[in-house]
Length: 109
Image (tube, rainbow, N blue to C red):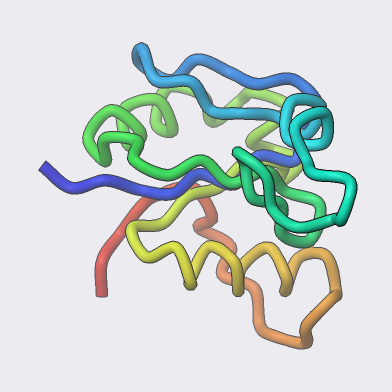
């Protein structure tokens, strides 16, 4: 069983097959005053949630292709947390990088 890190730009969290994927409202509310990462890391405006079962994520992703959060690129995942960080930095423009457009499917190389 593999896991993925999910990046969520929406304010509200979502339930993915029994797993809580945190949203920005929770991430910001639990961020220390010194701006360091709190309980939920924030990268380029996305809240990161690690430890989501890959099979559960892939099923959720396949069923939710028509959801606004998916269509607008507000949620994505990958097995490698550093890849997720690079992906969201590329989307937000904080780091120049080609953006992979199959954003949500959690695939290994």
